[in-house]
Image (cartoon, rainbow, N blue to C red; front, side):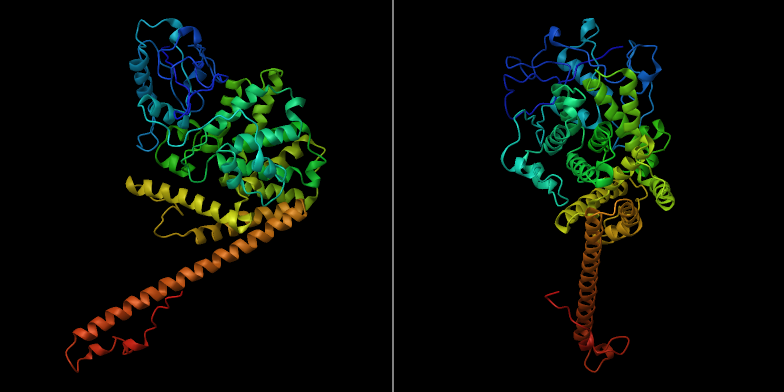
Amino acid sequence: MEVCYQLPVLPLDRPVPKHVLSRRGAISFSSSSSLFGSPDPRQLSQRRGAISYDSSDQTALYIRMLDVRVRSQAGFEPERRSTHPYLCIDFRNLHSEYESRLGCGASSAPERRVHRLLSFQRYLHSSRMLRGIPQQIPLHILDEDYTGQARCMLEKVGNWNFDIFLFNRLTNGNGLITLTCHLLNQYGLVELFQLDMVKLWRFLVMVQEDYHSDNPYHNAVHAADVTQAMYCYMREPKLAKSLTSYDILLGLLAAVTHDLDHPGVNQPFLIKTDHYLATLYRNTSVLENHHWKSAVGLIRETGLFSHLPPEDSLNLERELGSLILATDISRQNEYLSRFRMHLNQDNLYLSKASHRHFILQMALKCADICNPCRPWELSKQWSERVTEEFFQQGDIEKKHILEVSPVCDRLTNTVGNIQIGFMTYVAEPLFAEWARFSDTRLSQTMLGHMGLNKATWGGLQQEQTSVFEEAESSKASSDTEDAAAAAPPGGSAATTAGGTSSKEIPQGNGES
């Protein structure tokens, strides 16, 4: 198996601190090493990720859910890749560039046969570095403690009006890392589970990097927002007195990684473009399976739970997957019906581990789509972001002559009508049942915000419709006046076809 190195993703606009040794790639960088210089083979360490590299191991064909096949001595095996130009990522190009830059030839030493498993995001960062293109938004690694305004915000992290956008700015774009570390420490989970802080920090940095910063919605800020909402739900009285430390750890990890490596398009897009992820997961919960497996890959790669008994770490990975898979919106009715049945029969017993796990699933589902329940200033930003991501997908579909997905056509949809439909058919039924389960001030606040936000979008829709109708009327009036001016004296063009004088057509109000 021929393999090559990957340069770690480091900010190009500032030197590497002497006290920082980056373990994000296969090469260790110290202050004396050059970013693009030839690496010392003794500094290289193989990073196997979550799978075995034994040539007889068939699971090596599915490396970190990206279906990247292992190269043999004869070269790449034929592999089924997506033919769609937007999401077709050919890793062979990356490897060939590495060989030309680092001099990896047939005579390379065995220790140089190192293969780094890349997510979509990590591949794009690496390819930019190889072409000498700096990152547009450097992903700085901050090892100093959060201070000042960010610390003040964390004192109120349990408030439902927590402004995650402001917090992300105050932490220099590291809101997800900072928030998660704070919550884990607040619950005492780092000490309780004896987590290595270096491994934990490395895990969170890699998680944040594997969220696509160019996605308007499915990015690290969304993951941080869901994590903060999950924290609010786990503080509710029914859950706070029932959840174990293991449940809390699992819930926070699921929130942090629930959309890991999201490509910014939905499952139907992956299926109709014959994307290899859709084939790999048999068109079933394609994105959610990918998020889960990506999370497991980073957990194993960083060795975050390597100190636990193998059976415990495997069980944690399975339950993590169960939580992330519950966020599949196509299975919304399935979970909602089960939740409603439990509430109707009053047979939810949080003393049972399986029932607590189900409630964590429902809590994560609520956290994932809680944007309509936030205060208007926050909810509006999320609504605009998710709609723009829909529209970007629609633009891609039009460009490649594909059927445009529902709500993805920017010419026939607006933010308001998309949000009103989403609240009516998805959010309101879910949060109504959650309020039955946990009838607290927070639940009533969320329902109140959603009602106000829905009414506000409705009002904006009416205003837009009125403006459009007035513009159309003004245009019709202008056309009629032009026709009247062009008609001969005494002609019939002075009136409209319906016999209505042009003066009777309402003119647009400039203030509307």
